[in-house]
Image (cartoon, rainbow, N blue to C red; front, side, top):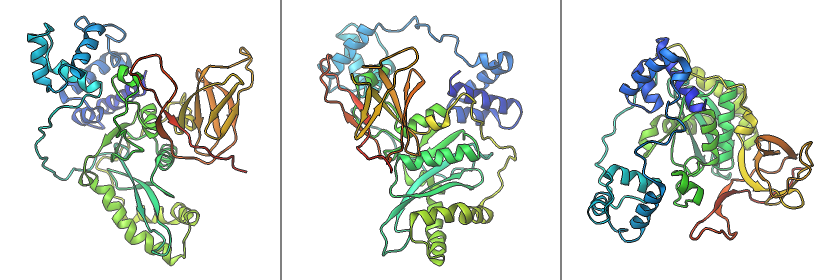
Length: 414
């Protein structure tokens, strides 16, 4: 089963045990209350087997042939590029002779990155969101760049995460800037010390959400963009990502940083702390415990919703940086200034031109995997923020573009 299916089983079991309501389970699964009841019945009758869709692997009988979809996309980007979804659907039916619904046209266009011509979204009405009932249902995290050590020192970023139900500060650490390394560190700390949360509420920072319009050919065929490095880790663990569109939507974590800028700065000044290393030791040994003792509250439901980690998951690999690479003819992988030698394997003497997955762990060390098998390692190097860049190699597909995550050059740590 996928991690998402395991997560659904976990939520449905909680609903059957009476630990949460079916409505709450449906919201956490991202489905309607009606469908949540349907899933609960399936799970009650057939167990985990009832969660796997019966049509998996089958082609739907009403699916449009791929050549028809390609023709519709060609018309959408060419002859009818200035038409909105409804107008374009009318032309497909009346002029092109393609009988298709507006919703199908809309989904097809959006899945290939074609934005709507006009947005007619009404203004939202904001209201206070009630806390979740159980600890572990939702974690909120964010970063706060600030002059934490005083105006005479350079600014840095405090990365922090709190539990929504209790307000417990579950992780906090200083970094030079808000980026992927900080969020992955928070995630690893939370999973190791508490468990896997059911969802994470976050803003649309570039480390968490793809905000670009650059679609590779593979992404266009798949109908969705690849996630960020942090997004890869969350998907692998089955954590639901919820993106806030306004600062008001994540008001609890915003208020957390307001409190920290008031109390933590004063505490560090009192203890003459002026470096990131000393500040992180202070957080781990003193401040977080004291903060939670003063400000954390009891959840409405005493039973916790943290999910245990699956035994087959390698957390060090999952909660790390992921790069795709091709082994060179000299059996090396090159990423920036890093050159990793691939030794001959027991069943394969050469890996030249093989597609491999390269992982940099949070301690800076490297691993190379071929078909999920570890084939090489490399000592620690400085962790750099990955960037997604256009591959300039010539492609055989006209108009196709290829993007990949790029590791910036660094030197091994002595």
